[in-house]
Each structure stands twice: as structure tokens, then as C-alpha cells.
Image (tube, rainbow, N blue to C red; front, side, top):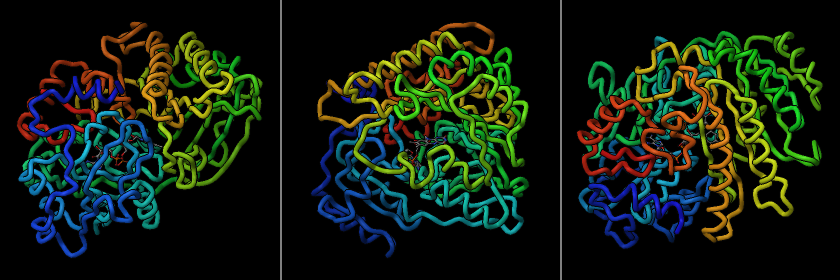
Length: 510
Ligand SMILES: Cc1cc2nc3c(=O)[nH]c(=O)nc-3n(C[C@H](O)[C@H](O)[C@H](O)COP(=O)(O)OP(=O)(O)OC[C@H]3O[C@@H](n4cnc5c(N)ncnc54)[C@H](O)[C@@H]3O)c2cc1C
């Protein structure tokens, strides 16, 4: 039995009246068509555009619609939700198609609402906010703001949507200054489960506004959002790419701790972001995966010499400087439009995320050894996997306070995730093997994680970024273990989505 099926048995045996499998290919959509604007259209599985509109970045347990509605206005979204409700059929909004949590596979049949035509971006006359339509991707927003000498926090990958990351919190290069993507939201236009279109903001409905910033996928379809923007002060950036062999893991991460996370407290300047990736590239090191650090600094033409010297003193395989602008960051880290993560190849890419306050070098070693075994085995089917450590600056994220929004993990500092990449062979056994590897590697990090109170070892609940989640983590793990958080989310879910129609993305069970 595939994991999605196991998950479905557990998670979808809830009050929802929707069938998990719902073939709507023969549904008469003429009444809907009459209510849609002239720019909207409906695709069925025989339409030439259908496959493209349904294609996903990761092929593990994807949603499988029979009909796709492509709205051109927010009223089209309203009408589609009303229609789906009247027909009692499931529906799911899709955007950048990079969501990979396996609960998405719960949509088997039903209607996809593909937001691609909701693409407007309007900067307010006072230059303080931008109104972004529901289907805009990160790069479109970044470019439009850049042209106006403005910027805001967006996800870092160019082909991921603006709102997909934002509704789950949203990490980005500028979070050290301004906080998460969702911390920028001022108000959102949201089509609720009932089909009602409402404006959500602190002044109008503070509870729902709180939940849209961390658990937003559970509450509605955002047709547009107004977000804070900022003057572009420091366009220039410097990069230092430092590559280590696996035997240098302890030294490299001990150095990272001493520079940025002494005692688990982030001291990383708002102008500094650091990633590290592990990947097996025999041309770089035939014996095992390399560890590649990307040290990225804003407003300078060379990365802080003290930091670079400290890394270079460890005698890495290579250490290469670069200069550019904010617009180069995605390419530097392999997530621009032309890079692998922006292609839809049919491969599966489950991730197994964990937040940490600092690096535990013993745990890093254990995780590395597993990653090496998985990627370098003879004829390994997982050789193309990637282990991600995202060390974004934290000051702006911590500033609003832990409880400010539904995003639960402002106290943590590092987002780590093994991503097990493979070409599916149609067997559940291969998916199971990938899951086993991913879980073991995450468990290795979890065993050495340090909580904010200094306790080492498994937290009571795994701290797991909902937007990277595999899908078999607990609800506590996605949204925080604090009882008040769970109670607040459950109350809101019961109020705004009593039938659980928004239950395909890390669903909140009441
Ligand atoms: C290569 C890559 C890079 C990433 N980079 C980042 C990053 O820098 N920062 C970060 O925080 N996360 C990042 N993520 C994770 C990302 O936040 C999630 O994968 C997110 O779900 C992607 O959103 P999407 O719109 O592209 O995907 P989709 O699969 O289209 O949507 C994902 C979910 O969001 C919902 N959704 C999308 N738009 C709307 C809307 N307008 N209204 C309501 N619901 C909506 C969909 O219904 C679905 O449930 C990255 C993921 C990948 C694969």
C-alpha cells in the first residue's frame, strides 16, 4: 500500500463528505461556463493543454484532476467553488505546481482551479505596498518590483508561486530584514469554502488573518494579496562558494556554529544568508558527496573576509568568489528558471524537513554517512538526491514574536531537509525505500537537535516546515505542538471550512 493510501485512511476518515476518488470527467459544466468571464476556460483530459496544466514538479502522489478550470477573474474562482460545492465534488487550487506533500494525492478526480491567469501586479501610488494576484510566481514579482526600485520578501525559487510559500510562512533572502513572506501581508482577498469572497486583514478578521500566515492553504483560495514593499537599498551581492569533502563535515559545521549559532542563538547579520548542499558529483569527489556552502552577503562586492578566511583555513576542495545583484541569487543556488528544480521531469522529490537551532556535528556525521551510503551505492537509484541546509538570516523572523502568526517555528534557525530524488518505476517498493532513507536521515538530525531551552535530542514534536513536508508528519509537527496553537487552528477550521474542502495540503483535522 502506498503511503498516500495509508495517509488517506488516517487523515481523510474525517467529517468530509467528499469522496477521495471522484471522477468528474463527464460532469455537465455548461452552467458553470455561463457564469465564467470571457477569459476563463475549462479543460478536460482530452484538451491539448490539460497535461501541461496538470503537470507537477514532483511525481510522488500528485493530485489527479479530471477537469481544470482556468479562471481569469476572482469572480471566476467564486463561481467555480460554488459550482463544485453544488455538485459536491472536490477541488484544489494550483499555482506553481511545486507542492509535494503527499496529502495532495488525496485529490483523485475532481476539479483543479489553475490560477495562472491571475497574474496582475500593481504597486500602490505611495510605493509602500503591492497588490499581487493569486497566480503570480516569485520571479514575476521580484522583477516587477526591481523595475520600480522596490523589493519584498518572496520565496527564493523563481518558478515557485508567491502565495504557495507565503501561506505556509514563506522563507526568502530578505527575511533577515523584514520577516517571512507572510509577515508582509497587509490584506488578502480570499474565496472561502462556502464560495464567499472576503477580505482578510488584522482589522477585519484578525483570527483568520493569523491563520492565513502559516496555515493558509487550509482556509481558502487567495485571489489577491496586498503586501508591504521596501525601497531597494542594496542591489549588489557577493557570493563565496566553498566546497568540502565529506570527511570535513564536522569542521565545516562546527565553524558555521561558531560564526552564526553560538549556544543556538542566531547571530547571523540580516545582510548575510548561507546555504549548504550535499550532493554526489564524482567529478568533484569520487569517494562521496561533497558539502558545498554558499556564503551570500548583501550590499558588498566581496564576502566578509573574516568569514571567508575562516572557511579557507579548513582547506576546502575549492573556494570561489562571485559578485552580482539580488537577481543572481537564484542562479547562484541552482533554483532559477533554467535550473533542474524548475523542470517537470516526471521524477519524484520527497523531502523530509526539520528545523534546528544549530548544527550538531555528531548528528551531521550520522546523516552524512546515510546520505553517502544512499547516493554512492552501486547503481543507486537515488544518486541525484540533494541534502539542503538553509541558513537564512533570522532577525526579521523573530521580531514579531513567536505567537504572531500560525507559523510556529520562529525560534529555530536552520531549515534542513534531505530531498530523495528518483525516477519512479511504478512500484510502491521504490517509494517505500525512498521514504525509509529520507526518514532515517531526518531522524539522524532530529536525534541531535537542540531545542531552544537547550535540551538535546528529539523534541516532543518534530519541527517540520509544512511547505517541505513529506506528509506523514503529525499535525503538531506542521503547525506547532503548543496546545493553544492546535486549539486555535481547529476552531478556525471548524468555523471557516466545516466540511474540510481545503484538506489536500497538510490538512488540519478538527
Ligand atoms: C524548488 C523549490 C524551491 C522552493 N523554495 C522555497 C522558498 O524559497 N521558500 C519557501 O518558503 N518555500 C519554498 N519551497 C516550498 C514551497 O513553499 C512549496 O512547495 C509550495 O507549496 C509551492 O507552491 P506552488 O504554488 O508552487 O505549488 P502548488 O502545488 O501549485 O500549490 C501548493 C499548495 O498551495 C496552494 N496554493 C497555491 N496558491 C494558492 C492561492 N493563491 N490561494 C490558496 N492556495 C494556494 C495550493 O492549493 C496547494 O495546496 C520550494 C519548493 C521547491 C520545490
